Length: 133
Image (cartoon, rainbow, N blue to C red; front, side):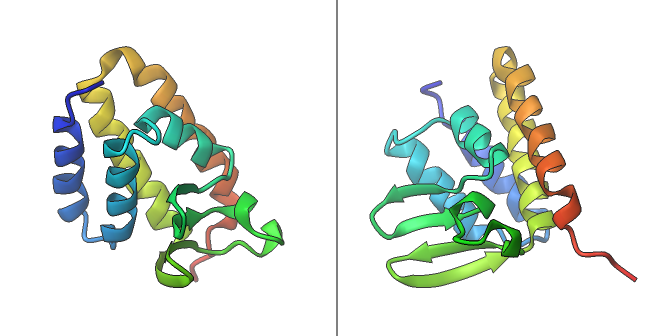
């Protein structure tokens, strides 16, 4: 999909969510604009536990990117060798779900695959969410 209007809408939706989203959005936007990936592929890889590297030193990590995947407890963003931020797994899942909903509205023919990836993402990390008392 060449029209990136949906990406601007994702930024609006993220902004109104109250969640920390800047690094995730920035990385997603850079990856898509630089044609390193498209959103369905970005989400599919996330559902398999892999983060994404836009370029050398600009990436984020999920469990399969860790030396010890069982120790994965937050989504970390990096610029160079420096961790710029991290967000909780539950916030990450929420943001990716919001992005998938927006994308699906702009690309209805890809809705089934995108929403399926969101479900796999949720299933993958449901046991990783902290238990609230």
